[in-house]
Length: 265
Image (cartoon, rainbow, N blue to C red; front, side, top):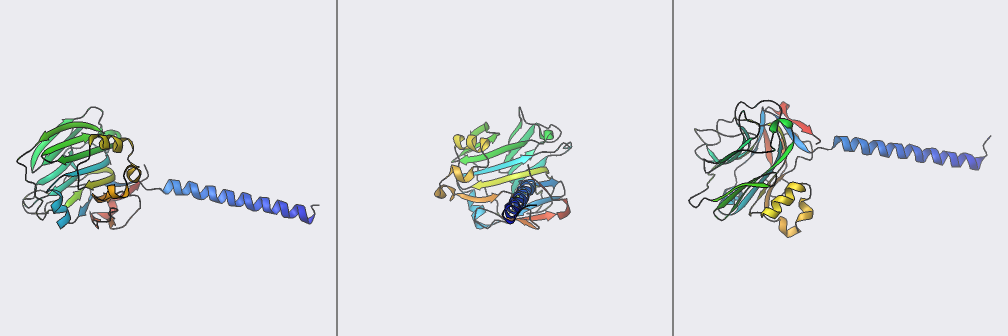
């Protein structure tokens, strides 16, 4: 029979073991429940309301960054990843997954086709994460996929104006009318969207492609000042996705809210 001292020791050992198991179990559950992306089934989209700040974005340099995954389903029409509408119902700025060809991506600027590429190494059907970046420095517009610059050209007569157009993530508008006729829904996931009031350099693009999770480590606090839109999808939300840049550009869930799902990878 154990004496009182031995019994107390064994009791303490049991308590430590129970607490250890509980902590490990909690950590495991937290890891499994970590949210990293919003899933789209082609029935909903995100709307960021027009604002004076978003309108003025296109008066100068800017950068749009998006991390997305496609879906194994065949796209019979272009699927919109992101678009800024205009007063004619067109694409002031838009990025699409191309139809039929699973390696296709296209970009529209000022309602005109800026580029359309079948990209080596890009296959939307494999559900792999891809990084897309469109940047403007003065009159030069540059487009990157997975850190590679596909096109950089001066568009000297471009006068961007979104008018009363909203920003959509996962869909687009079509004419006639402003903010009307939503379609071309995204199917896949969106991991993160960033909008900057500045052009970022090729070295930054390369770093962001390799280290998408090191936003705050890469910039000083002042370096994040030009970031006017940041949607990271790190928490399951009902009704909206918060803008973590501090500029109050929350993205409202439109369409069928039941089609929303959350992914942890």
